[in-house]
Image (cartoon, rainbow, N blue to C red; front, side, top):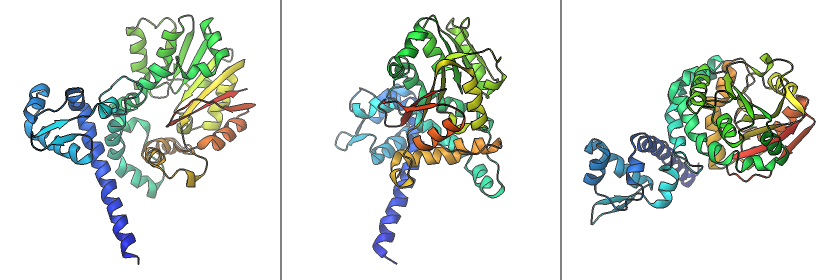
Length: 351
């Protein structure tokens, strides 16, 4: 065996474990407000950080040292101070913005918590149902997507479909499939005050939270949510825009569900599909984003589909497989939209 290759791979293993620990420390930084407390403050002593956060000093000290070693914080030995660079704070201390990445940290413990169940499914089959991820699983998904949906969906992404925008401005109808806690539906309701919007999601807790948010914002008269499937809607229900955001690969009945969605589209309506961005060929997916997505797939997306007896399409479908699935469901046109994103792919699908 090549001893140098063994050494290089050992370093890689240490690096991967360090990444896992960095994600755990990052989760603590988001949940406790440590990143927010340090953002824009320059160099801070341990005592200043503890004084601001009111957290236990010994824990904060060890967290700071770990984040320095991970490269998240800068350390000045002479002054014994710690600094969160503005460029880092832009990504980890910016909840609610379209550039916040701290939600990814919140997903790490949710996924790894079910790792023993997933390992068992490798042997026994089946999978981990969505309900097993709990309330913090719903929260983590929302933290990952919220800023982008609220700040980019209506004002940027939807501009790629000007005819749809015009229809919604005039009072069109929208169906959001896999709506989660309702971020997309509520965002569209604010942007298009004459439109009516329905959100569907099989998870009743997500639907409850979405309905409560619509009520709180005074939007319940024209935005409503249901745990029903698209096939349970009345046959006369037609929509100008149907959205499926980060969920087609999760479907337990993808072909049947897409056929039901197609039946609910108006003749000139559009299905806007947003999926994780991945290449069609495995050899083109050897990067950190695809690695992350395959982890998401094994520990969440694929397994919760398999738990329902579904095919487990997996997070990294890529445009070729996605397009083939849409055509098999009876859609006539499949268009890759020219919307720039490092992590998301956008498709316009028409009957």
